[in-house]
Picture 1 (cartoon, rainbow, N blue to C red):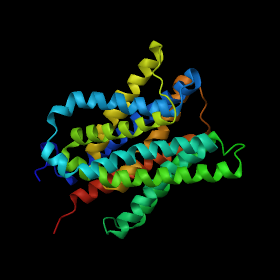
Picture 2 (cartoon, rainbow, N blue to C red):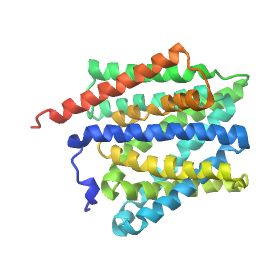
Picture 3 (cartoon, helix red, strand yellow):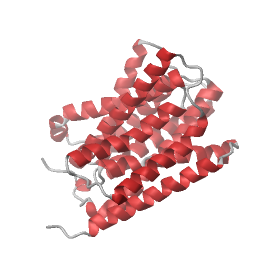
Length: 312
């Protein structure tokens, strides 16, 4: 199998840029979270509609840019992993929304964001791809603690009954597991296909999976210009562009580094809410933001040391 040109770059020498790329993906997803809240609160769109059109618009955009560059023989050999990864990508978004519908946003978001770095690290330790030391422990503790402080203000499970609570928690854990699995395979697909081609294939599969929701409920395209513009933003920026830079970073980072870097998403969402919607941030959220940024800084230092270490 011949890798694409952008896959031949050595991962260690580009770890710093890859970390920035992963953080950029988290930033773009964070802007998307704000747009999703606007579409739900102001225009009454269902999460299923938003998810489908986000992936569909993103797939069209990526196909226009990268479709002619797809290497079909390579794609045929990777068809099953691509189908599984695209389905997993759609699945973790769907499970996250199902958890939110049952028990509100705070707990599912915490579970879906905080468990993947833990799962990824445990898998990496078991496979001897990571070494557990004081620095890694401090990075994970600061990242997870900061995320909890950022998100926890948004409330608990509200008036959810015991059944809804259980289903909501199960859906949230499923979202975390699926996202972990996605991060484990996305880097390999990006290396084999190239970041652009991998992002294109995964987004197309995710859109097709989300289209199955039409069997349960009809899809609605917005009729007004403002919501149409928001849908286009979600598709082009938070689906196509975000997955493109995520895929590029995934090919050059460990899953632990990848999942920690994308924790920038909730910090972006709350900062934009404060800046654009006038929501006030309390002291714990500011402290959480500082902890999260410190963890990413520490992660960058760790990656730089690993890149500079002699290889035997």
